[in-house]
Length: 182
Length: 456
Image: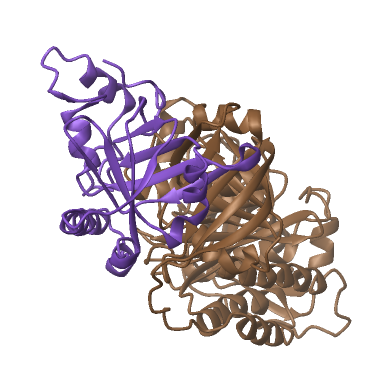
């Protein structure tokens, strides 16, 4: 649609990694990816259950610390099978996707810890959800749909924490899935 | 399998909000991505759009397993589907339905040219689980569609001829379904084109507008004999001058052909095209559109498909092959005024009245036959049966609907008000009414040029 920004491409994401003026890093992730992950975006998750069966999950926000450890916030009720798989020591995949231009990346790790969300996480999760809601309205989603999509029960929040072992371009297009290695 | 049926979750499959697709590789490493389309196939199957060969695709081919999260945009009710990959289809009705829908979704998200359907991946639904989510207040109930179907069918049952049936069908769409813009097109099997015989809700009737098989939602629905609907219009499926211009530049057309413009909305939000089929043969298309986006959902498609199917059966029932035995009243001689110059261009059977394009193809040939008979013998009354049997008209197969051609011709003559009319006088019989003396001229070329080959 005319009022949408031009979508990103996997090639642009990869070219950014090769820039000589590479931004400072937080573990595996460059600062721009950290900003994207914490910027009010879609956060979706997967793990692998018994017999190798995949399990899809959905998050409500994320924070990345200076060492590059990622905390993904999610509601327990919506993600029971995924949390069970993580308790059993299964691997994790998380994709962050910006609504306005579809720029996306995925991180993976062989396991993740399940924690309570910290008190100082709460305002940050609320901020990211509000930004995400506005982004969804910005791509012409009806307001009530955008609000429904970004509403959660604060009393049901958990965090899962992991250090990513690999990161990949996930922006739609040819080249999606390429490793985001330096 | 749980008691939840996929039929009750179809609003979650309209692509308003993207779904989540998870897969695993052979070592149990998961992969997760957004997917723009989860398409309802039947009670036990859905199809996912295969757009790129990527990690998801490799995992699916290897492990055959997927987990998909879908959400209802109206209530946010969410469900997790456990799926088993069955096969990929790269052509056919399901593929074309998904391709059109994806084109609309791509247009909505500014991803035209990026989202392109490579295949429809069919999955068996192994389980459906409700995902507890903060539900929204459900939207107000929409009027149920089944009573609208029933009322429409009851009304159509009263029709006694095709003309009435076509117009009443579109009227029923407006009165019972709230659909204000609609058209019916019939198939020209020989030319593999569709021509408009009835329309409702437009500034110009557009009767005579043609679409080729495969062109726009109407042409694709006819080609694949499957309903096609788009929730967000995209240039990929839009009718307009672009196609003719392209053909002209490519040298496929020597001159801009005489044609009638698409009468539809300039900026439609949604469109739907449903085959009017008799058995496995498509005889026409019921087309509807709206200015709002996402106007037609799965339930609308089901309801309108039933109506279109019934329309097909009624069309077959109302064929007027048999002549009515009643005596025809003799026409009054009312000729006056200046003469009408009628011209036929043999190449495409196009007929011009006083140098203005009227009609072409089979309907053009029919009019010419009537005018020739009239000029040489003074005859005015004709039967559908004699036209059907006339070797000169070379009417094609049984599926060809002669009555639809006559309706098209009658409406075009009415719109032009050129002093020539067709009036129905009895079942299977009609009269040519010519108000002024008429001269006939035939040309070998097309498009208003060429050499006269006969003056009649």
